Image (cartoon, rainbow, N blue to C red):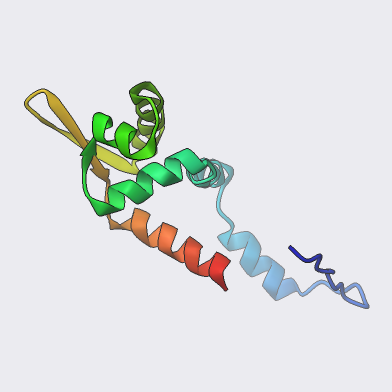
Length: 119
């Protein structure tokens, strides 16, 4: 990654209208915390691997563990976090619990992230 220099203004000047508009529209601290927590979930490669596998189809913990070469316990731990953040959902079929993406937003977020880093 190359180092980028940040340019600053040559004079100090406050643009009152821009500042007022920004102050009126900034998210409150609770929403910002929720958003930060949401994005923290995407900062873990294991969770990203699980989400990318679930793009293909729903799977049970056993299948996910096999595909990712991990223990069921490790997968379950990560699925719990993903479920708490409403990124995955599950359904029971007999004795088997299948996990899938909660909705299309998750794939969109990951696709846009990939587009951004590939630029």
